[in-house]
Image (cartoon, rainbow, N blue to C red):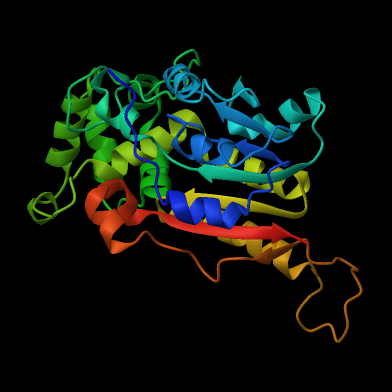
Length: 307
């Protein structure tokens, strides 16, 4: 299928990055290249954009979309490795970086990728299909205690123990709809009638586990703080509380600087703030965008500047 994905809060992201025409920028989650295109068209001949993604389909689509730009470089890599990859390229400082976290509309809509609880497909959920661990491996190989931990922590699912037990009883589980039915059957009737699909939180948890998303996010955003030059910007779009919490905590730590205990009368650690917040709290999409793009409803954008 064609790679179709609407970029979330495009104007807010570009405004937040405050792009310099001769700057070096990174799109850490290129997807179909929507945000990348907006960055690239604002760069001059001396500017440069490096586009990261771990999904071959995304890189192919973005390459086609940005083919008219000569100053764009595409890199197949988990954004967890942004710092060493850039250093191998001879890039030690950048002027801005954008993260659009989570799963793309294309990955959800393409049934064969196994991300969706609405379409039947083999359990997969790998953003990089050349990597080993799949949702099938997690669902059929993890013990009940570990499944409970993952579903509870990453999915914030209150019925995690019952769902994990049901998964264990019904193995082997081969497909997404088979798993969704098992999840639904493990939940109380009242929970099955809620507006949100019963399998949503568990599928989110499995996807995060398969792709190591939260660990990669923490590593990458921390690396971005080191990579961005003074006056450069870090912009992060998150889609659920776990993602947003990581960004908020990293930004807060770097804005504070000092690590001395609160009861110390004066600072003795000598640590200075490395960031200042551009967004006070998190920005949300406009009502108009939320109406036109349902994915934007849960999006939160945080932007910080290196000082």
